[in-house]
Image (cartoon, rainbow, N blue to C red; front, side, top):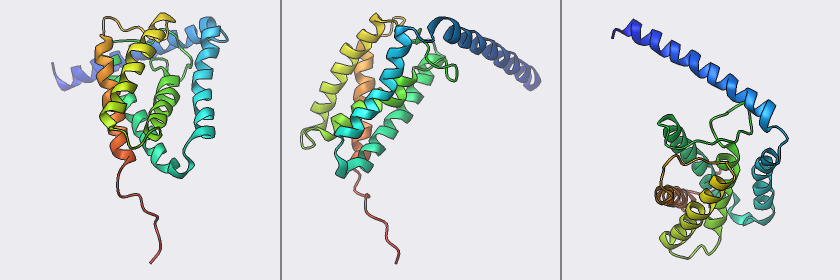
Length: 187
């Protein structure tokens, strides 16, 4: 295959993606919009942030947000890789903007859950805390989302999800506990 043939092939693939996106948008507007699942997804996007805002450790807000933002970035990267290889999918769509991703999970549920875990019992062994969180998220949360058609594991083992969640919480823990958080002053 030549470079020009490769460019043509990627353009054809892009056009197919545009068509797939049109089909997803059609499903959002004509099947899912205003269904109970759609409202639940919207609630899962808004309510975790409201709860976090009310119950966060206000002295650690900046540190917690760094842990939350790193969770958002990593969970999106992991998900994009897995989705591109067809390892799992999200049958229920909430937004025509990003129809492949489950945005309530990436932008609210995962980061807020991680931030709460970081602030609860801060002196506990992080591996123990992370393992408890990963077990609840993987074996409880992912199976629940599978049951209500928010998530389709397509043969992906929940055991693997455990390690993904453990990875997410441990990386967020590292960023949360960085020693370089000092106030910037002019000199």
